[in-house]
Length: 276
Length: 125
Image 1 (cartoon, rainbow over the protein chains, first blue to last red):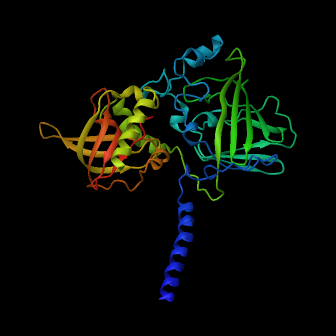
Image 2 (cartoon, chains in turn red, yellow):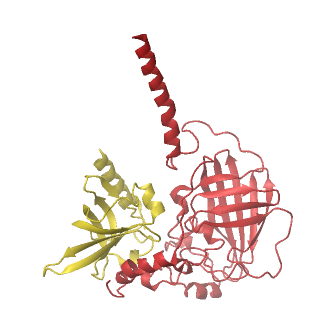
Image 3 (cartoon, chains in turn orange, red):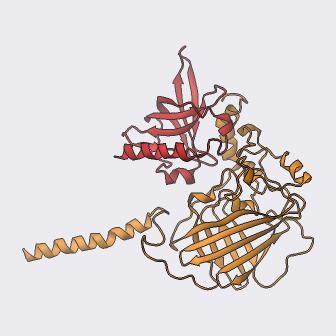
C-alpha cells in the first residue's frame, strides 16, 4: 500500500516537474518573460541585450505608431514642398492614400530591403540585440536582417556611399539609455508603410531605454530638413518585453517567388487585373 | 465556450480595428460578409499572405476557382493557425470579405474546420 502511494506520488511529482518545462518550450510569446504580478528586477547598467518582443504594436500597418497616416490633423506631417511632391509619387498599399494591391509601388512589397528607419516602423517584431566590445548588433525578424551600431567612438562618415540601412553609431546617454544616430540611408527606401519620403540628408535618432530588467522602450525621431520643416517623432517609447534566452524567433522572409504566386492568385484578381 | 470566446474576440476586433487598415483594404467590400461551405483544394502557407483555394460550382454548373487570403504566417500562428490547418479535401465553412470587383477572391474572417473548431483570422490586415 505504502509502495503504491509512494509510486503514485513520485509519478505526480515528476509530472508536475516535467509539465512546466514542456510548457516553457512551447510557450507563446505573451506568456514568456516576467511572471505576472511579480515586480521585475532592476535594469542592468549599459545593457540592452536580449530577445525583445513588441507584441502586435510593432506591426504598424498604417505607418509609425506615434505618427500613423490616418488622416487626422495631429498626424499630418510638416512636409516641405519637395517632401509633399515626393510623397505623392509613393503609392502605398496601406493608410488613407492606399491603392489596390496590384497598383502599389511600395519597394518592400517587391522584396527590397526596408532599411532604416522603416525596419523599426513597419513589421517590427521580435528583435534580438547583442553587444560586443566594439558594437551593438541588432537582429530583426522581418526580413531576417541585421545591422551594426558602432560604439568604438567613430564619427558618422562624411559623404558616404548610401546603404539601405545607413551607417550607425551609438553611445550611452546614461546608464540605461543607448542613443543611436544613423545617416547615409539610400533614398530608395520609404520611411514607413504609408509611403512617407526621405532624402539623402535624413538623420534618424533611436533611443533604446532599459526601463527595468524585462522592459525596453524605443523612441525614434526623424530629421530630414529637405522633406520636413522640423523633426518628428515616429515612435514614442514603444514597449518591448524581454523573452527567455531560448526563444525561437520566427522567419519572416519576403520571397520573390512567393510574392509572384500571391499576385497571380490574389493581388491581381483583387485589383481587377484578370481572374486566375 | 471556445465559440463564445471566438465570437467575443471577433466582435472586439471588428469594433476596435480601423476600417482602412492594411494592405488591400481598398480592394475589399468591407461591409459584406459571405459564408460558404467548401472543399479545400490547397492551403498556401507563405508570405506576404497565406491563401486558401477551393472550387465552387456556379449556377450554370461551371467550376469557379476561389482564393481567399489571410495575414502572414507570423500573424496566423498567434491565432492558432498553422501550415497543417487544412489538407486538400477538407470540408470547411469559411466566412470572408469578397473583393469589390466581383472576382472570386476575398479575405478570410474566420473558418469552421471539419472537427467543429473555429479559427479567427486577423482582420487588421
